[in-house]
Amino acid sequence: MIIPVQCEYFALEGLGKLLNTIKIVQRSINTKLEIEGLLLTMYDSRLRLSNQVVEEVKLHFQQLVFDTIIKRNTTLSEAPSFGIPVLEHDATASGSLGYLNLARELLQKNGMTKISEEERIIQ
Image 1 (cartoon, rainbow, N blue to C red):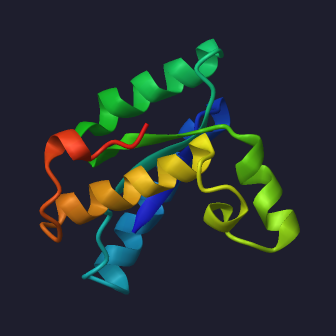
Image 2: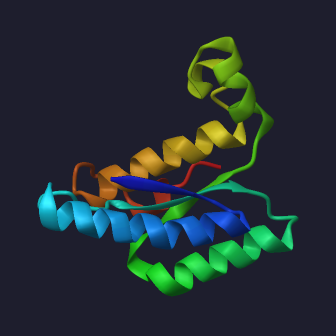
Image 3: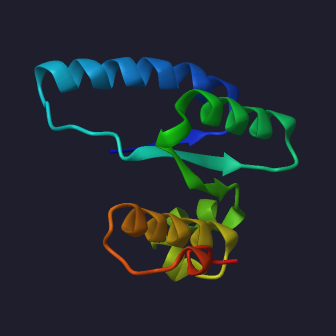
């Protein structure tokens, strides 16, 4: 399971409750349920709050946080209104590149690729 975490204050509050719910599900319904990682989304480097949320999540959940952070991007918001994936809408947008980086990170983390560390990040 990948848990998206918006870089907003209330997302931090909800994250704690969600993790408690996941523990209950793991104990009683699905013992094989695993958290692959926390994906920070809707990040805006200009906002102090976004940076604080990133710091807090990384501080408390170190190993679970993906290196990839999905930046707030107009293209990500527009794509659903056209009924197409963001990669079809604009594959060069920062949001698209963020999701491509996440895919590479997941493949690399699970030993499913031979991509070197230097090649991992798309700018």
